[in-house]
Length: 277
Image (cartoon, rainbow, N blue to C red):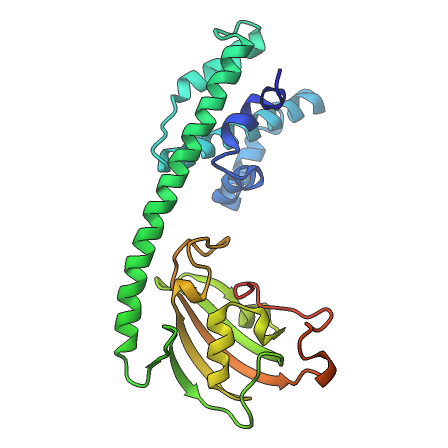
């Protein structure tokens, strides 16, 4: 058999739509502590051995994984029959499968392609909606008092100018910042982490490299960054494709690069997670 069929049926059919570690963890997080305590008390004598308990735990984890995977696939417009899924597992354990190994492999290959196509279609639809909503948000923000729009499309409001010289591309800056999507969903926040970050100014997304030059040490700026100055049509985890990003940034310090090293990144230099290139 090909490698596709050498992995488990579960991993083959479900992994394309949901990360396994998330699927296993999510249902447990959904229960409150009281429910878990009650369940444990009610079932403390349900197992006669550690092997029985381990087998049940494995089955419960697989069931939760499948349930969450089915829900994720339904979001893509792919609705599997839960009864047939369970029947397939039971028949496999009983050695009485209704499909040959070759049929199973072929069907799973077709299913994987179908899920990928559905995911691609959804991503394109979401990206289009993100672009339209982002433009509307930027247009509204640009009309607010005190905002400016640069030739690149960056829209910003200097809330505090700061003092001294503005940073250069080769400088290392120290900042505190918060990043959100236009709906207010937060994806990065150095304040929450409890420490500012340092990074070389030319090592981040274009919106940051440009925007931080409009303030000086001690300054504060609000930036609304269009997709082409951020992550464009690709996106990153937590930031969908064609997203407009909103950043509130406080420039705490500027560290000029050594003259002999102005074109080389500093060793061990950090960059903000949500603003890396």
